[in-house]
Amino acid sequence: MKTKSSIFAAACFAFFTDSASAAAGWTDYTAVAELIATSRHYYEVRLPVTQNSSGCRKKTWFYQNYDAIGADKAFEVLLESMQSSLRLRVYVTGVCNLKGYAEISSVSVVR
Image (cartoon, rainbow, N blue to C red; front, side, top):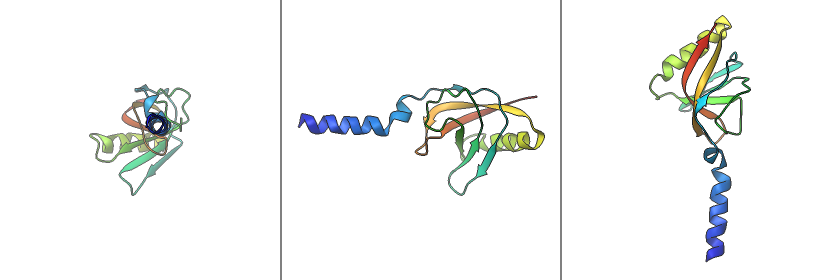
């Protein structure tokens, strides 16, 4: 019985490794490389950052749920920064989705 619980614990650890090593914080400033409005419940954004404290597998991919408070404003800022060639940073929450993307909650723009 102990072997079964050990195997289950190891499987859970392997499955949730991204979440276990995740941390919240700001990325460094960069330009938006790609912004994808999906038909799923979130949009995706690729930022070629070098500093990402999330611990998620995909270091340059991020997402935000459409129903999150301020998600529409954050999407507009991302889109505008692409059009204006502004640099920005995002705040990662420490949550990783199944694709290995870091969840974001805020966007900050700098000239």
